[in-house]
Length: 359
Image (tube, rainbow, N blue to C red):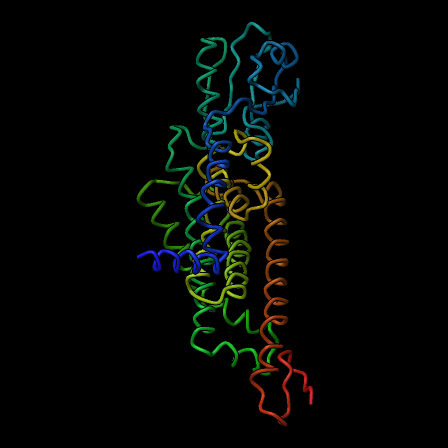
């Protein structure tokens, strides 16, 4: 019995990845949950429009962080500000400060909208409240677009990483490495089938979300498809990158979960980014799911134009380039040289994995 216990400890000591998951991961989750688990939004970005904008903006409670005032602004311009996600609330005033104002609230930003409506109700008849893009503040309308991204993350990261590691365990990865094609072409060949299957899954999940939960699709399908394609390249590239640093299926799954957990907790999918502590919030801005959620919610709920979604699209494109380049370099550096040394018979002509004849 004692020998068995000591043996298990020795095996754990030889596997630093499992040891880190047992010791570091619980501490990490505790700290992150402690700072991130907060549904209350302390302030919302607000624009005030109308003839009495200056007077009304000074009378609003501190919860409303007024960033814009426009005495010539109209209700149509106020709606555009919300559609482009420039502010969370727009207060449209009457001709005099005493006249009832109308507060337009962005319902696609669920937690901010719930906090805003709660505070506006306390103002009584002073302000009339109108929620746009999600009038009934349904949680499913906000969650379904984010869950589409989560499903794509699961398929792209875990399934892809396991696929390449199985090649290594079966001994066929070395054959891929010495084929007369570039490492980038090998990785693309591994990614494309998963990309097509994940795109099919995304279509099915999106349609089911619309049918089962009544989630609207108000925006441009092509903008949504562009965002989904960039996001898929990022998560599939992450899956390949994980597979190049993992020796077994177990290691690949463990590493993939380390990438998956922050996506669920810190992407704004469950807890609003605005409510997180600044020290934790920046992690969310490094995650691809954060930007896909911005795109999917913007297109499906707000009919956001591509001009207002350029930032998340550009970030995803940069991430895709970085991850794909990292996967290619890792594959070339760690796999091809090993094969050239170990797998080539003595005296035979060597073949460079990039396709160049190195004899």
